[in-house]
Amino acid sequence: MKGVRPVTFLLLAAMALLGLVVGWQVNQGVASPVEPSRGAVDRSDSVPAVPKLSSQLPPLTAFNDIAERPLFVQTRRPPAPAGADEVGSKNNPAPQWNLVGTAITSENRAALLFDTRNNKFLVMSAGMGDAGWELAEIEPEGVVLQNGEAKHEIKLPRF
Image (cartoon, rainbow, N blue to C red; front, side):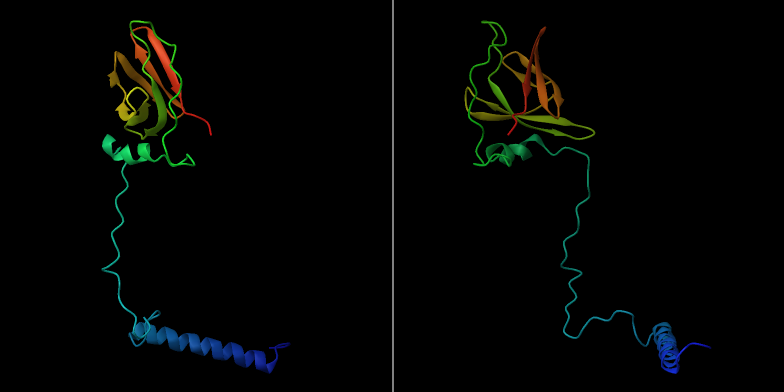
């Protein structure tokens, strides 16, 4: 071995020998590659199981806390009621709802609305309605209400 210093050669030989000894001990069961330190406690049975991911939307009542304390509002209070909506007729005015949020999965869609007339939150899916208005469409940016031929769109507020 020309150009290799004797010290370097000895270090390489010692590392190779050490690797062979450790490999032999692991194969013989004398040593394990990772041994717990003394006094370590086995906590494998105390770790909670990871829940299965599902594309199912939880029950609509599960979103009530989000409605009462919106995450993306600095005060964590519902938005103030907006002015009266001029859509609809005198006999059937558009509902006075504010859109708080939408929840969309591959199988379900739901909208969280705030009714300004009675200061209550409504969690609705498509087809549900009130005062003659039906929730026709739920999209990430807003919802569309329909009453016969009349349509009313409510967009999510921008902060």
